[in-house]
Image 1 (cartoon, rainbow, N blue to C red):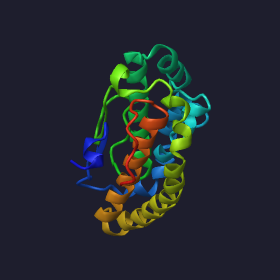
Image 2 (cartoon, rainbow, N blue to C red):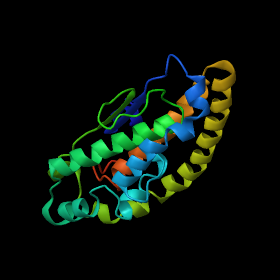
Image 3 (cartoon, helix red, strand yellow):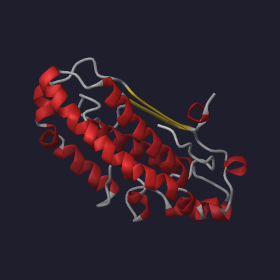
Image 4 (cartoon, helix red, strand yellow):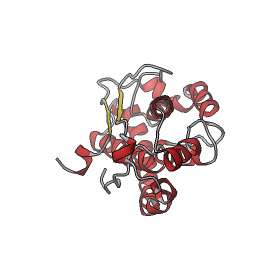
Length: 206
């Protein structure tokens, strides 16, 4: 297996069989209610998934600082904290995927729908180093620089896809795969540096 296959974070988004031109045209307007709900849950720092690290750091809806302290002093990651962080990440990802035109179904607050995210629950004693949460923010700086550029590319692809759907009824598959790849990359970084579910360094791969 390559680095992405064995990494404890896996994301797949189903390619829609049909694209609705009308809801695509008004996507940003239609998405406003669910975006507001996502913002209320994650705090005012709600970001696209490739910038999800910003929300927990400034005290959004994620259990970040308590998890950091628990790993540091007790070598423990309470399962319900993990479940909450994963559920919130999945919800935010469904919302962002809808805004980015990757899905056509209105985001559910609890159902998986066509966005499939798996994050392995860590064995803290063997998988997580006690002091690693203190330095991960520094180690992911190269990733954040690359993701900043990839985010621009993903936005460009989304704009092109918006026009493509309106005129052809389809989302270019290569653009779809690229945007999903950017989300996948950012989620691996989030799991490493913010959700703190793994000490395995994220690969530089889409």
